[in-house]
Length: 418
Ligand SMILES: *Cc1c(COP(=O)(O)O)cnc(C)c1O
Image (cartoon, rainbow, N blue to C red; front, side):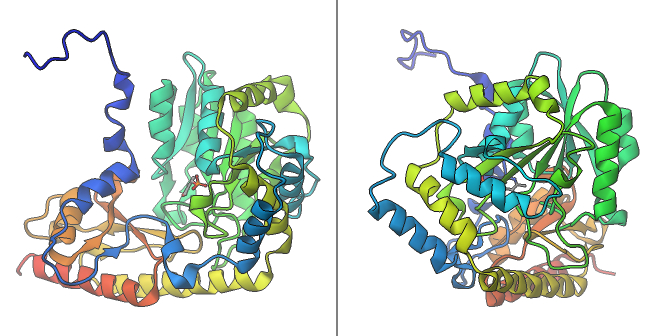
């Protein structure tokens, strides 16, 4: 076809073509396009995990003031080392060491543009020809999208909903081979709202060391727990297996737009250095963009001065939201929730498709729900589990109640007639 493009010698990277089908943002954009613009009711966003627009999830003034002071000081207007400025690295090392049986050094810490860039860096470091990585199912599709782009083979192990979404360690052992580089653990869990016990994390560490693979611990929801199990960092088992901890201030401080995260080597035995991983992380960081300098400059103050009252208020709000969500879902026909969420901002629920009329799968459920009820929910297929749904409860209380009420009305309307 003649469209005037023939004379250009430009080809594009075709590995990027499918990204919008595999990412959460792409899936949600598609569902958003299905909203009925004539519905006078406000849209209820139960699809994505960003509560920062709700007044009850505003960050602490301590953090806001730290940013203002950093900007006003005029000390943070320059380019900085690619691994991050020393005071910020030291502050993060001290902050994380509070929960560890050994002390991290500032050299263990690399600053990143949110946890997302930390994911990108570690997968890039491990993406050798032929290598593979073990990812959880359900999981966080950012890993799959990045691995696919890097041509790093992905092997999925299952999380078991009947056992609090614990890792099926037997399937992990069956999947790993001599080309496996690492296993990814997301705790507290997105999308499951699970929080692993000390014992389970230790078993994961023991399995990984037996297999000779690293553990990548995505702890972006660190300390956002409100159930039986306290948060235990994977790094606590760093003497059993080398752990690479990924995190950020996005979720605990409710500021995902500030884009400040970290990659931390929790490896008191120095194995990662011997393997050349440390050198490659530094090399990768040199190519990457750096987090904004004044955000780096504010980090020591944010980490050291944010008060317990702010954290406990967030936790209390999340707990009430999570428990409300769980109780309301129990009243909804066709949706089954096995585990009350104990951490993060999400719950995974199963759809009983056979009880619904004119809805064939989770994707269709979410498209029709958007159109008829102006409620956005993420289809489970987007996180690896067809005919499940991921629901965010980290929104304003009245909007949450409203959204769940509309889902109930929707399910009742679409129930098979007996
Ligand atoms: C939100 C999220 C991230 C990304 O965090 P940012 O700091 O916003 O880049 C990474 N992993 C998981 C599991 C998340 O839910």
